[in-house]
Each structure stands twice: as structure tokens, then as C-alpha cells.
Image (cartoon, rainbow, N blue to C red; front, side, top):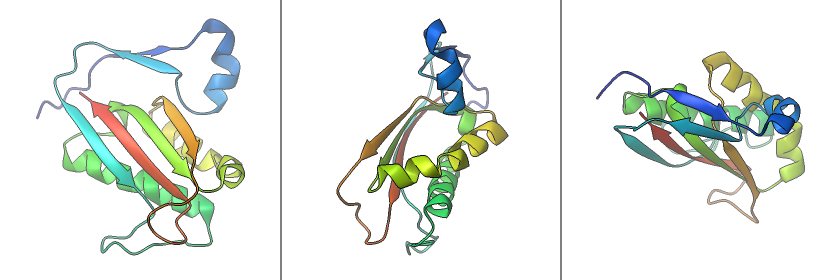
Length: 139
């Protein structure tokens, strides 16, 4: 697999820049002719054998779900800079927004700012799971 990350240009209306950057993601990204597309199934706060971890800690659940997305990226020879889209599903939007700095800090650490959509859902597949993340990566 090609190890060169495609050129990415952030796309945000100029009047949105201040509030948009605080969320840790771009409103859009333009990528020139990607050569590889990776779709990542929803990743939750599960350990290597599929057990729920951090049932009572939403920030830790978010951090582990992000780490699991990164593990799939790495297995494909990609990294966080290749992320073109995240969809974050949560059973508790207020709580997720209260710990969203976990994601903002992680994105800053790895130099990524993928366009992200947050969606509230009634339930997720594993009892006690409060967050699940789907991803699209391009290279």
C-alpha cells in the first residue's frame, strides 16, 4: 500500500472558523485523487476479545473507541491523517459532548481533524456501550 498520505485541504466557510476549530475537526476536506479507500465498521470501547471496557466512564469509552479506529487504520497501513470522515453514535449526547475534549485532544496529538458527525441513538449493540465510531479513510 502507498505510504504517502493524499494532500488534504481543510474546507470551512471563513465565518465558521473560530467555533469549528474548537470542536477539533474540519467542516469538510478536499482530497486530490485518493488511491485507496478504507471503510471502518463501527468501533466501540471493546477489548481484543470483544468485551466492553469502561462501562461507567464515557471519556474512557470514547478514547478506546478512537484507539480501536486507529488500530484498524494501522492494520491497513494508514493513520489518523488519512481519516476523511467519522460518524460518532452515542446513547447520551449531553454526556458525550461533556467529554468531547477527549477526542479534540487525541486529534490534536495525531494531527488529524476529520469531518465528524455526532448522532444520538436509542441503543448500541452491547449493553453499557455509550459510543461507537464509524470511519472512512482515504489515501
